[in-house]
Each structure stands twice: as structure tokens, then as C-alpha cells.
Image (cartoon, rainbow, N blue to C red; front, side):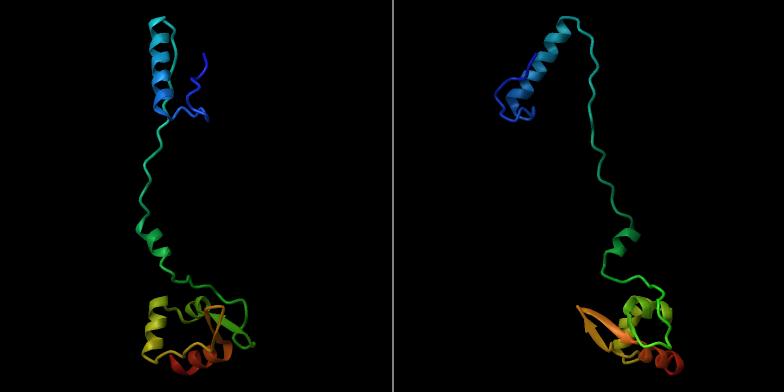
Length: 126
């Protein structure tokens, strides 16, 4: 048996194709043809866990810097968090309260500090 030609794509999603498929099924059942029907059900989308929701808030994850503080270089906020052992929120709260040095610059919208700035903060300012 072939599908009805009402649907150009023949996806079986239009009402006429669906009705003709059901009628064909009943006809086969009346004739005594045994068959198995497989119904695929998509699982309901699972809610994200609270930890997964927090990951997408724009906060950075602390990462150990690849350079030594005695060398000249730039540190991003993720490196500063790892070196100081503080969270993203604490870093920016301390910057607002002038308890932490402001970034030495911005590169492509991302803050950076020179290693000398962080080295002096860790030696004297903490």
C-alpha cells in the first residue's frame, strides 16, 4: 500500500494522511493481519540543576595562571580569583569598596591586571 498523494512531502503530518493511515490500519486489523506498532515518545525536557543554572550567570571560574607572578604579563579575572582565593562577587565588591586594585586595562571587553599589580597587592594589601 502507498501513502495518499495529498501531502507533497508525504510526511504523514497532514490530517488526510493521518486519517488514511488509521483507516489502512483498521482495514489490516479486520483482515486479521498481525502487526506490531511502535510509538516513539520524546522524553520531557529535564529542568537544569541549580548548579547548572548558576554556571550561566557570566561569572568566571578560577584558573591557575600559566605565568609566574615575578614575570611580566597580564592576568585575567579568572587568574586573579585563583591567586587570591576569592569569588567573582567578592572581587568586584572589593573593587567597588577600593579594597582591591582596579584593572590595569581592558582587552576586548575583558579586564586584566599586570602581574606586578597583583604581586604588590598580595604582598602588602591583603
